[in-house]
Structure formats: C-alpha cells, structure tokens
Image (cartoon, rainbow over all chains, first blue to last red):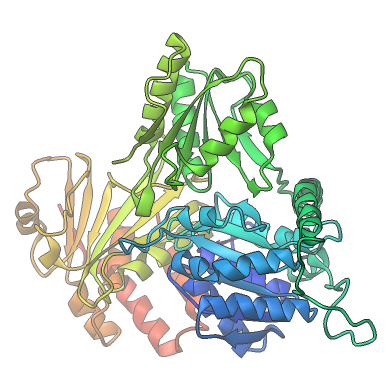
Length: 396
Length: 192
C-alpha cells in the first residue's frame, strides 16, 4: 500500500485505513470470509499477517456464519478478535451476532455498508447493519475515511470496557467511503498501541484455575435476568462512548461524541442523516444558509444504543425535521432512523414536525440538490405547520 | 457551491484509469491539497467501460456524491466516444485529453463539441506506453499530458510522488519506464 505524506496526512481508501488500524491494533485472532465491498480490508490485512507485521492468527473460514462463530470461540478463549464483512455476509452472521452479544464478548466487526439481495446489488445502503440493529451490538457510524479509522480504535476500548463487555460494529459506506481515497491523519504506531492497551479478559475459557461456562442453557427462572443485565450494559455504554471519545480527542485532537451537529443551534429545519451523505448535506446547509434559510444537520454517530435523550435536546427547538434513511425497515412507516428520532421526540410538549425520506438504496447517488429539495419541503412544513406526506422515497 | 477541481477518467477495465486517479490524488495530496479519488464500478470484466474520478481542493472535501459535471475529462480509449457519455455534464470551458494518434481538431469534431471555450488535447499514449513501459498502459503518459494541459499539478510533483510511493511495489526498471512515459506525455501532447 502506498502512503503519501504531506503535513502528516496520507491518502487512503476506507478499506485500507481500516486494515491499517487493524495492523496497529494487532488483534490476536481475525477469522474472515471476504465479501465485496469490504474485501480489501482482509486483503490488506492478510498481507500484514504474511509479512509478519502483526501476530494475528488469521483464520480463513468457509462462510460468514463460521467467521462469526470462530470470533465467538476465540473471544471466549480470551483473545482480542476482529473481522470485517458486508451485506449478505452480515446477514449470514445473524444467528451468531446475538450469541456474541448475549455472551458479552467484546468482538469488533467492521461492516462496510452494502445493500441486501434481492435484487443482487453490491453498492451502498444501510439495510445490512440496520438489520442487525436489535442484535445487541453497539453500532458506530462513520462519515469519512478518517472517522472510520478513528472509530475502530475507540471501538476496541468501548467493547472491552468493564462496564460494557459487548461487541461493537463500526459502519462505513460501501464504495463511497470504502473505495475512495481521502486525506487522513494516521496515529503513530506506539500511541495507537498505548491507546488500545493490552487486552486482559475478565474471565476466559482457557483459565483452567477458574473454570467457567459460556452459552449454557438458561430457562425461564433466569433467562430474563441475563437479558436485563445485557440491556443495562448496552444502555450504560453510552457514557463509555462519550468518555472514550473525549480521551481520543485529548490524545489525537479529534474528539467524538454521540452525534455531530452542524449549524443546528438556531436552525428552524434540520436533516438527520447517517454516514457519508451527511457531508453532502453539509454542503447544502451552507448553500441555503447563504440564502438566509436557517437550516442545520444532525448526524448520529452512535446508533446503538440510541441516544434518545440527547437527540431530543438537540432537536427540541427545530420546527421541522427530515429524517433520511438509507434503508427501509419495510414497516410501511418510514425508515429505522426515522422511527427512533420520532419516538425520541414524543416526550416533548411542543414537538417538531417530522418526515421520513428513504434515499440512495443500492448506491443511488444522493446529491446536494436532493438535500436542498428536502429542506424546501421542510420549510413549507415550517410555514404551514402541516405535513402532507409523512413517508416517501426520494432519489427515485 | 464549493471550489473544487473535478476530473473524470474514462477507460476500459485493465487500462489503469482507476490507478491513474489514485496516482493523481496522491500527487495532489502530496502538494498539500485535499483530495478524493474513487472509481465507479460496474460489471467486472476485462474491456468493460470504467470511470474514475478525482476531486481536488484547498479545503477539506465534504461532498460524497458522484462527479457529474467535471471540467477535466481524460479518455484513455477513444472507442468510448459516443458510447460512454464522455461529454456528459461538462461545462463550456471543459478540457478533454484523449489517447489517440489523431489531431485535436479531428477529436473536437468526433466529440461533437459545440462550445468554443472547450479545449481538446491529444497524444498517442498507447504508443508512448509501449515504447517506455513495454505494454499498453495509456494512463501514465496521460498523467504527464494532464500536467501540461492544466495548471493544477506539476510534472515534478507527479514524478516525485510516483518515485517515492511506488519504489517498493515496482522494480527500478518499471519506475524508470513510467517516469519516461510521464515525461513523453508532457512533451508530446498537442492541444487547441
């Protein structure tokens, strides 16, 4: 991989950046079954393994179901474990995702977001990770190559935090981010190593002096208590995400929170949107601000657990909100992000009007003009106080 | 809209346009710019039309949509003219660089350009690459031609970047051949 240096910056694709972060983290085990568009992560990383640049045991398996199964086994044995996948690969892991989180294993998975079949499509949307939103994994979303890279280091710390002990999924957009070279600042190897630290499992299967069982049967007398503990752990992880985001900011100058707001403070209308499309939306925000429209943006970074309270506070003075989903939950009532934001706003006395717009499925381009059109619609809602179309597909 | 240089590369799979966009992005980044370099993937087979794009700016680039109205268009395979929408969205002052043995004025009419503000440059990048690199790799001479036809990247920056970044990947002979190809592309490109 070629690295270009200028002012501490290099040019890397999202996939190359994730593979490089994995090299710096040097996990113990990486079970993998490559799939488009995340293939290059494992391609690059297997190069690091072959070159002896990492000590990782790379396990090539026969399916994604096996990849996640091997992650679970290795993690239960006390290893720091990472893998990467996309789309059908994540879908095939589905059964094992719940087992990873139920066993409280701090596995890290990079999901390069891609549409689900049918019809077959290799391009970006968020149907894959949204399908896993209730699997008990913490989910971090990334706008840029830089953020995807930075998120991976933080994911390790969040997952392994003693108050959390849950798997974390880092999501970035297929092709748009995974295959685009962008400027990024890399962390120094020693500082990266120091930030993630050594993984000392609280308990593990290979500790024969303290034998334990993972995945035992749990019947009605205690299953619900396990789930209650797990639910409390994911809810509590929000504070840890904030703490680690602050620490990362102090060390490396890029602080991360639960979500990013852009020109939202005095905004009348706002778009809520995930990942790379937020960048395009910011360009629309600036263009409309120049014309005197008070528009803003909120980009969730942490989607699981969903920061209900904080997002409600951030949106409470906005008159009209458009939630843009790059996935449809096929509920007949808007996308998954829309459902969460709408639910979050319910407790407000004076609630903003809110609409759901589904965009960009299967890699359909989302342009500045698409964001401008949504802002136009929101402005009419602000004027009239009336929502004419609650849910709708755009970019058709 | 924000201030970007936008470039679109047209070629066929295996002609190296994705790599060319990558090399151009890296060289611009090395010159202190913010860059994007990304391909557009379609059917993955040899000979299929491929597009690749660059955005180059003095400011961080936030746009993550496709490049739809590039001022700079590079065409590595002239048989794509008329079939791959090579002039789509281009502004009146567009600059076209075409790999062909034909003259710029011949290409202007083949491209059916109506705007007098548009400029057309041609070079025989296939021949140059055969003579310097030893195989058909039109992307490298075209990078040299781009630095001659435009002002946003210098030939030195392209060559320095290539030498520095690819020394590990390629043998000195391959590096030398590519550098010679860039130099000849720079010197042999003709425009109107």
